[in-house]
Length: 285
Image (cartoon, rainbow, N blue to C red; front, side, top):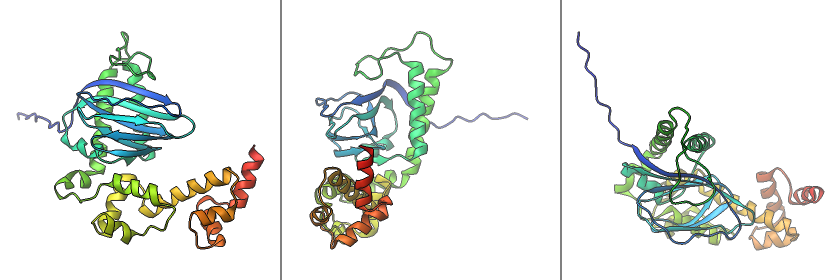
């Protein structure tokens, strides 16, 4: 009996890698507009970034990722106090399906973050330091662990393939794409979360329906719209509590219907009342 070998289809292949960086950017750090003939994966491990590109302009927060397209002009700015920790990987790839990830940030889960960490570790086996300084020609190590370059290629390909599989609905839906961009909704929420925002309002403003809106938002961010808005409120409340602002004033500024409701809302999401949170922070000082 003669066995027949079959050719394997390679719908996604990473052909070359420019760099694998792990940056710690200080407050106020910014880059000039840049573009290059390869894709650039940008992941925020800590802090947040303001991203400006031809395909997406908006915020990138902890655990979020975006992939800048080939020859697309982009820049970044670190607006938050404290350092922002970022992973940047430049690479060539033949898959058009990665275009989806250039238009809106996605939030990685713990398993996906571990996979990304493995790519970074393997990048250290391939490339010489510095890893935290922008360079246009990242040098390979003269002595490498056996199979490092191949494993770096394969681990990056596996990571990208699994992302496409997870978001296949959104990737394949480009032809029936909604009129709205998730980035526009996030910007709207960022500017208006202190007011009451309803799903019906968002669906009307961005010319879609509640079902499509909720599904696309959850796929892109990993959160429901309600949880996203409430997370923004909790973050804002903590900032004001840390600054010594009174509970009554915070409840009023964030348009809670009453102080008791404000206190129960905060406890539901943090496990502490606002007063308990303030007292605990005071003990830690």
